[in-house]
Every structure is written in C-alpha cells, then in structure tokens.
Amino acid sequence: MEAQTLEQAPAGVVDVAGKPYMPDAKGNLVPLESIKPADKLQDETVRKVISYARELSEQISRFKAHTFDDLGAFEALLAQEYGAKVGGLKGNKTFMSFDGLMKIQVQVQDYIDFGPQLQIAKSLIDECLREWTADSRSEIRSIVTRAFNVDKTGQINRAEIFALLRHDIEDERWLKAMTAIRDAMRVVGSKTYVRCYERSRQDAPWTAVTIDLAKA
Image 1 (tube, rainbow, N blue to C red):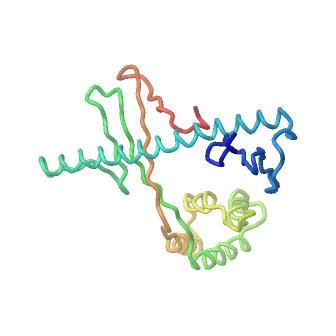
Image 2: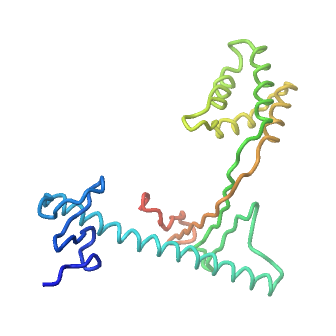
C-alpha cells in the first residue's frame, strides 16, 4: 500500500515513512500509537472548535464589511437625493427601521493619550494639595493619587484624569492645571463599532443583538 502523504493525513498527524506521528508542544514527533486516547480526543475537539471559530470569524468580518457598504450606500443615496446625511458628533450615527423596532448604531471611539503638559498639570495640582489642609478635599487627594499612579503597563489612569476635570474648584492654579490636562489630550487613533438593537414594541427597552461571543 502506498504510504499516506502529509496532505492525506488527518489534521495534526504527520506521515513519516508510512508511520503516523503527531508533533507535541515542543515540536517533537510522537508516534500516534504512543499518544493517550484522551490526548487524541482533546486534540480532535480543539481542532474541531477552532475550525468553526475560523469560519465564524470570517463570517463576522464579511458581515462588518457588508454593513459598512450598505450603510455607506444608503448615506450616499441620501446625500444625492436630499443633500442630507445621517450623523452626529464625531461620526456617531443611528439608523432606524420605519416601525421603530430595530436600529443600528455606528459609534466612533477615540483613543486618547497625554502629552508633556500633563506633568505641568501634576505640578500645579501638587501645589494646591500642599496648601490645602489634610482634612479638606480628601476626595480630591484620593483621585489625584489614583490618577497619576501608573498601572502595570506604565499607563496612567485615564478615567481618574477625566474625573479631575469634573470638579468645580476656583483656585487659579487648579484651573490652569485643568487647562494643561485638556491641552495634553491628543487623539492617537480611533475605532468604529457597529451595534444592532431591536425591541418587541415601540415602548419596550432596546435589546442588543449579540455578536460578541463572551456576551452570548
């Protein structure tokens, strides 16, 4: 009988001189008959699930591309016919079915980094904290500590930085610090998300059409 070729061998199995082997995690070839049945079954199960995952991933990619194509074509037609467009701040858009039971939201999320002005803001804030008594504005002290402490990846806490901007403090140095924070902000990238929603009736809450596997 002719030896089984690599292309004819089952997934994960390598034919060497007519004998089947499977490479282990270190790249060593292990004779198929030496591998425990449980390990073979696990390998088969993982490959089966991954094959489905690849197909689903490709399908989602096609869905996203078709969605943007369809919405873009609609907007182009709308602009041509009426000189109008669908949209809001920063490119955020909502498309609604006529009966109000389905909608598509296109949202643009900016990724923000901070420039050297942030260190100027930190110096001004430190001046304020040194003059305020230990008992006053304790919540501000806590936020400042969390905001400027870097995490394990060396990133500052953006949420806490933004929280500082919400405080209404009239100290001139504080106001300058907040201006420095705003000047330090810079958009380093953005990502567009498409989210689909539906509801059973016009006064019912919206329910997301889940595409994220983790939320399914």
